[in-house]
Image (spheres, one colour):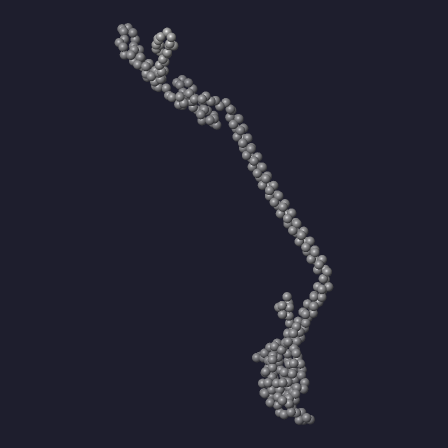
Length: 303
């Protein structure tokens, strides 16, 4: 440090030299030692060994790993779970010491786990309550709809009871129509059909007697066992009187023009000596085309 004296009235100024760094200080020490060692040693004095060069100190904040000294025990292993900075030492940093025992940290983790479990249980409870509420709402809505439908059904039954007579009358009408359809399923207008048959005979020929054998309602008419004979629903056997010898083949040709004609067979031709006329017996079969279907129900009537 250098002091400069000035005039008596002025305040003396002090100049401070900058402090040498650690390297410079160590360097100076090493130089001094080298100077001492390198000088000639007086007789009778022991030589002084030069000290080893001192490594410059590391900057602040640099971690220095602890090494075991000779003759000392090995470093004790640190327990697991401690922070990693406990295994190292920081020089020049902010001193920090973690004095919390490991059990406190375990308890803290357990508290967090219990908090998570409580939140999960609360969430499950909320979901269950929401599902229960939805099921209750659906059940209530369905019950209301069922009650409304039952009320409407009861109202309709009551209104129908007011028209029970009309319903019974309609049922009787339907029954009568069904009976007519069954009973009239084999209905043939025989008056009109015999008139048409008389028209096919030659002039002067008159039908005397007619015998009709037809199918009954709900019954199947018996068919002929003779081959090549057509299906029939009725058999007509009639006798015709002709003033002259009848031309039977011409008669048969005329009968073929009738509706529902199947076949005709002449049975006999006899001379009535009292009147001088001829009596012809013929058997004829007719099919279903002869039905009038007056009582048959159509698709519209059935609905």
